Length: 539
View (cartoon, rainbow, N blue to C red):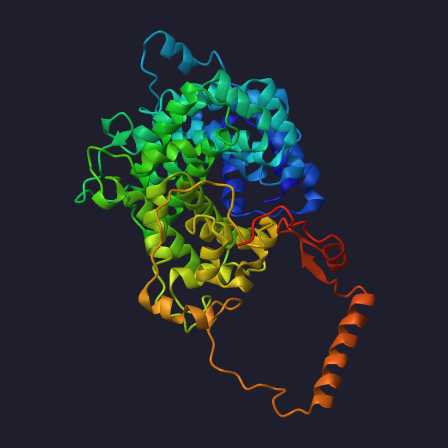
């Protein structure tokens, strides 16, 4: 249908004809996501015309059709000028029932139930969808949202979470997520003025049907219960994403600590749930892990302190079921073999911090990830065990992935260099040791318990023959200079020296040495400034 014809007719038609005209446009463009740039000015005029119709008193069916048209147009960020104005955003906010003083708010104040027909509810949903598109695509619209205090209207809807319909809740939560992601200044308004963290926590609690059996302990899910419905899972994930934004910076305080512990308990409950598909379960657990990373590490004890359900005696009575779910999640993400940065590093970071601050978590994870060594004939990075996969990641091309995997194993080894080298070999661990200034050995700064790791008899017998660089017992290699004469050996040695000297002079390589504090420095500095050992005790 000719866009110019639609724009010209829209100005001179009644409500019924307008609806028919836009319905046809919607059918033809429902799956259009890239637009003809030559018609940009016409689409801007169409936006203005649709907003003009929405500004009048028209029937819900016409409002819905106009909003569908606007939603299609809002996919093109170049034509949002008419919408990204105070007037345009107030029209959309009013149709989404987000503006202060709207009918729904008045009914709530008067104790009346805010009833909507199915058609009126579709108008609200379409308006929310439009707002999501416009806010995402237009910085100007984001600023107008701040000016008209759209956050207040969103939190008013969050108060009605127990009565809202699925799509109203879903797109309300998505709009909270988008606004808090794109406007960091609005996060403070949501959190401090509107108490949105508490409201979103209540949304999660209601959606996940949490029943409390202790201060921070939810009743375990019924093993016979059906998987979480897809709609509940969708709203849950949107709430988790919004909470992630609002907890990016910790303001501290007892009230926050209490709220964070409630969130941790709800997330533990979520980790034990399954949805209708394995992929959706993994996606929900991924959002839960991202949010757990934002919580203070002191709150992670909620994951294992579940007195009513009980725990394992060998781990001081702690319940490690949630930690096992995290380990299983980590294993799945490693097996995918791609997207480690977003998919794997969050769970590794969470397990690292949990292990660093909670002895039982560290011991439980180490028993599975770094069991006592027996077969040391194979290089630590070769194989299919979790340890093998993590050691391979220590030399990954992505710096973030490499550092996160290495830090995880280092913490499991109680930040002992000798212990880490036993499991990984010096070559794989060199990057971490350089970054930590521990090339000369020693320990990290964190204090750990004194429980000792016992070596197996197989490891003790093989230890003298292990190559510390590769971390395994190597097969005897033929000596390449065994049959050379002394003159040939001297010639090859001098040739090697000359090659290194040439590379060094051309700045291709730079010989380095280890300083007394374990850091790397140019070789000439380490030779010119030897450590003063006159006052130290000899070993």
